[in-house]
Length: 126
Image (tube, rainbow, N blue to C red):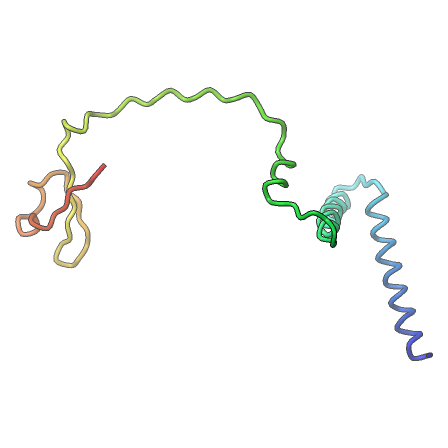
């Protein structure tokens, strides 16, 4: 029995210290920034761990996001529509082709593509 008494005593002492630290962070208000940050971290960790207990409803990511979001703000005005740059029919189509080394090259018109690559040149779709 004496063999078990020591480990049980130390385990009980350790658990009492953990409960004391827990109650300290739960009840004592902090004014120092460093201690306040530690307290905030601990309280957040503690609430998340308690939610993992059996019998608790699992919270989804969406539910957590909804809780964290502030009240909806006024709707933003829609940005003005951009003017189209130029009619597509007025501009010549662009092309791309592969050169001797297999690298892709781009050209603004079929006339800019070297003759030996023109048969393989493909039109760029916009």
